[in-house]
Image 1: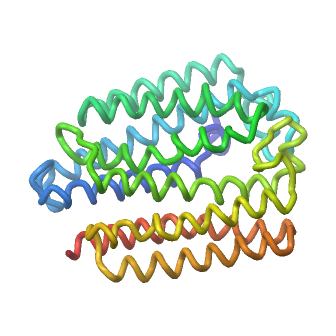
Image 2 (image 1 turned 180 degrees about the vertical axis):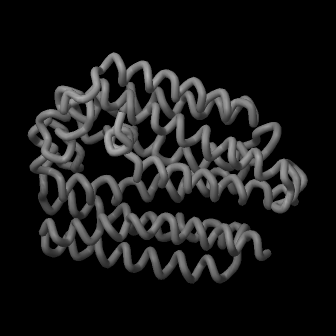
Length: 296
């Protein structure tokens, strides 16, 4: 298999974003426990387990994407953005894709489970929810975005739980999950607005009303408003300092402005700016949380 085909099969950019998110949460978890869980931030043990998380997370996410494409292979042939993926293009059979997905899923789950059992269980839950709940719902109802936002936000939770030898979900873990969960909505809807014509070819219904209208834009705008206080939770709960608060506020206001422009113009160009804004928003806020938290 060519590297370009493998990259398309596993949705490389999405997979790397997932791994990045989990990595940030992992390091925050180590710091949150005083560096006495997997050792300090400078211990060999900690970084060995970080590598397990990165490789395991990469494999599990790749497996979920692979299963998604096995299930949607006939639909992928209908859309311009997906018709050149290896399975719809005929360069790989669905049987080969299934075997590869199973192999990556089992290997990734083993690595994550070796950190602690809860990390392994959450990774399996993420695969099942993404591939077998979100995927079929995309053609049935806009509720698919809500369902998809759960596995979309789980990497932040998985990374945090992986950062502790016995696995524990605490206040910081829930905050990390909440930020990524709420962020999913304007992110998803901006993409769905830009690609709506292509999505309709496959019968996907991802916009809140099922079409590009003002109601869909208003709901996307409301999601960015909700994200503002959620992004400030680390500061409000004294888990981070004023630096994170300022950065989160600025990033959220930019995000809100972009969503407002979509609501005002209803243009694809505005949705595209919101979409690109979402690509910057999450990593910037997560990195600032990490730097601010480590510096405390």
